Amino acid sequence: MSVPWLVQVDIVGAMSLLSFILICIPLYWHLEAWNVGCVVYIFWIGTQCLIQGINTLMWRNNAINWAPVWCDITTRFTIGSSIGVCCASLVINRRLYHIASISTVSVTRADKRRNLITDLGVGLGIPVLAVALYWFYQGHRFDILEGIGCIEEYPNTWLAYLLYITWPIPIGLVSATYCTLTLRAFLKRRRDFNTLVASNNNLTFNRYFRLMGLAAIEVIFTIPLTVYNMVMDLTTLPIYKFVGLADLHFWFSRVDQKSAVSWRSDPGTVERMRLRQWLVIGCALLFFLFFGLAEEARKHYRLALSSVAKRVGITSFEKKSGFSSTGSNFKPNTSGFGRITIPTFVQRSTRRGSMDSFSDRLSTNISISDVIEEKATLSPVGSSGSSTFIASPVDTEKGASPQELLPPVSFPPPPRAYDPESPTRRDADVPASVRPNSIEMV
Image (tube, rainbow, N blue to C red; front, side, top):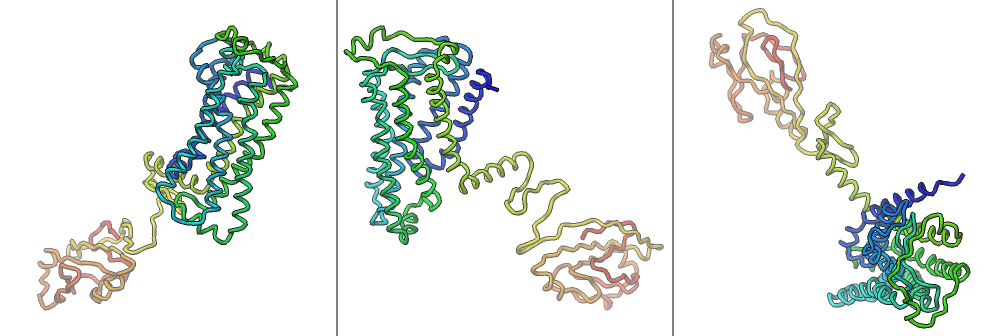
């Protein structure tokens, strides 16, 4: 069963906008690394995905000329982006070749500036030149297709092949040459490759091969797709006999508006429009698979998720221990120096029958794993752990003589007291309180 036409339009629009978001995710990392080829690639493909998504929303079920200025800009940008993707692949392959064949590790500031200007000239200068030459073979202003949006319009003439259609072939051949030389240099200098990659602070071994894989795929598909597009145009479109610019630009300002029923009646046009839309989406998704799911990308995702988790109340987010908050599932870290035991409260059930057994001694126990043995050596014989007892007025009223008090110790203050008239306490892991119904803090 065939998918309804409007559903196809919605799918293309949604995938175009999604592709724009996905391809823009690694943009900051490539800007930080001064990776001109990938930045240019994101610029051309990402912007084209955004334009395609907006066009499908505006002309989903109509062919009305809503925004003529928008169409003037976007049709020319489409010309530039189709050449810009090939140029971005050329920039990437050229950079990889220079890294693989470099004879010295140190690169001067002048060399970096010269390489940057060259990369921008190839990645942006050639597409801008293609846009400037569009006027010479442009038939009229633009066309609007229902469900597609505004597209560029030029007749099937030899001037269009010379100034635009065939350009990806020589660019792809040069890029393929650089790619072959890169593989050759890598195999020849494989032992020194780690040193060459280490000389570039913004390039890693894995990133180098991802760049090589992306550029190789672009080279493999650029020339065959260009040849296929040329064959389609030559076999399905009538050849326009060029007799001059005056004839070509006759009624130049017109805008042809075609309904979906009209233009979809031609199978050749349907196939070209479908290829035109999904090639852009495919290039964006391919780039995201190479760089949006890499190790450094996952690291940035974890940092972003941790930041969001802290904003919603989760206090920590760690790779090994997961996340913890103020809830009941909190698991403290028990490794490292200076661990402090979290106090627990225990309800005592033992009751004392007389006021003679009453005392307001305060018993605390702070356990530090790395120094607990040192504290134990300073404790009195009758005490447990590192407990500290503070004498109360009640003990004084009982008539405890000064000779019965133990001499004060230097750690920890204040001095400890021993009262023989007090009931003998059971040995326990922690000091027991002498108050009835008291709560001990351990």
